[in-house]
Length: 120
Length: 112
Image (cartoon, rainbow over all chains, first blue to last red; front, side, top):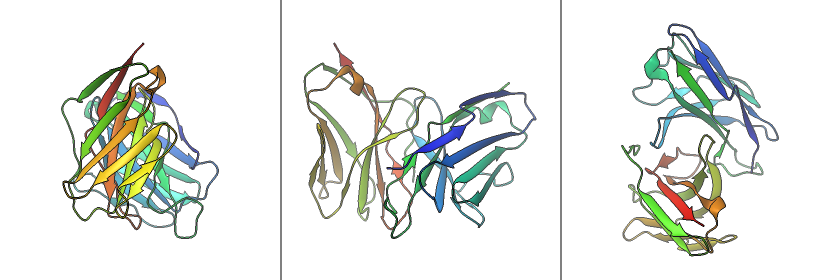
């Protein structure tokens, strides 16, 4: 598989501030990364698909101006939650997948450990 | 669309018994299926996958069965151990790098 890290693992912030979450692919150059959100006792909800060097593709209902995604390199994608509010409190998880010819398939996603965001 | 549940189904088994976790998927065109294990406060961990041209695949202590006729997927865990306690999610995709659609998850509890 692929080894994925996220930083920070947890963050508490005040309402109205912005928070940046990093997702790093440690042993693999990830052309494509995904960002998910998960509320307690619920499933994973895809927020956006991030391709290196291009704009992210957001899922319906996800505000692109609120959840800024930057995938500037093959090993790093960032998610910035702008003007965070208590309803943005959630568990944010990224994943990576391969491209054709890579050692990991284009279909399998390998996940990071997640970031717990709490907005006061 | 994505499956979101208000509560997780639970399965409680005795240590050493076999566990069977079931999943109904939504899209008959789905070509690729994965099972993930998620422990509390952690990201999902890949367990096993299967493509639509197969109906069974075995890993270490785990077996995935696919029944395309009724759009059903199951995960069998042999000799369940306390360390297997977690939430298990199935996911489907159309393949070719397509999005994963996650099921609602099942919480497995292993009693010593």
